[in-house]
Length: 436
Image (cartoon, rainbow, N blue to C red; front, top):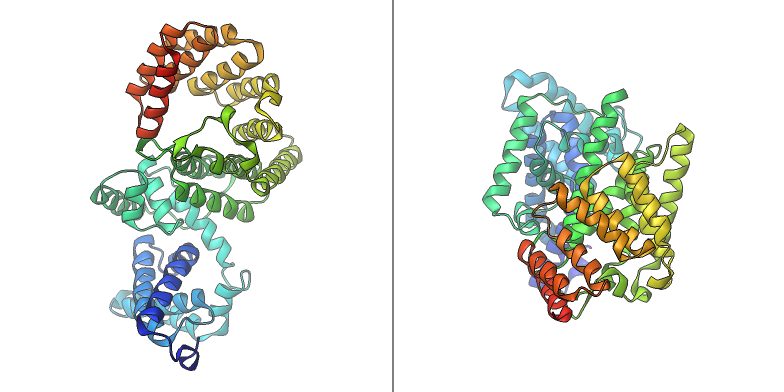
């Protein structure tokens, strides 16, 4: 927008418009910006500082000069210039000054950002993929990977990350600082791993995206049943990975799972009160997201067949979600198929939580007594002690068997174990409804 275009616009309105533009551009472009800068300076911490400096410059200049035609390229150019200034202050890096100065002066430098694929060292999407693998490097703790991924790839501020996971802001800030120091200390290369290492590192990347989505879909603690912003960030990251790694079956499997799960978001609450899967109004499920999920699941199956491989854990979970999405009514759900898919999932990625979910499916397919037998075996094993969904599932099965007094006890016990206020209210409501 030119000065003439802005004539007559109140200054505060123009400033607000520019600020909103900066925030929107930052959320979208910051991952690519930090990725491109990391390739140049080979340090995530320095790259993020340069990107933040460019953001500050945008907040100062855009309200005065207007939002540029290509905001992302403006930020990249500004950050590169500041990078050159930084390097010039260090005489030992004089060679990089010439390299960066030459790149900034040539047309290819801007084209590499605006038109992926034209850069001399690979396109910006390659840089973004490298950044994904660095941020999710196994040398970092799970908590650090989550915080760093949301900061660098989700475009969230430290305060936003802290609020998302109900952690003190200084704690999150320390995690991010330590993560950057660890990556620098361990000299983690800015590259995509190859061969066998890729499989192990990819698993870490997918786990981080999966955990981010799950925290948004069913918040661990606090008063909110969901945190939709986290779901949206995870879904966006999954879609980015699809574009970056189209031959990886589990990348599509994860995207399929998140698309279908996200399709239920609007139906998961009513007037602020949680609604269970079987009670949801399926007309409120987002059919576009369901179609996207089915398409991603088809790509996952095709990619797996091309490798002669069986479906992976995320593809199997996506297939389970697809079964629910295909049922027009809860009564139409193919629980026998879901139980079989959980059996396959347990063989591929065994865990007590998977077995608990299989018990739910068996309880629906074969009757509550069959499900209860599996749950009781799990309880006897002790692996899920303290996990609130174990007594919750057991209470549901007992209620269906008419053992209401026992069901009430289980629901009360589950309510005492959960840290989420909305879920606690739901469980106590079920306990009250059980009577006994």
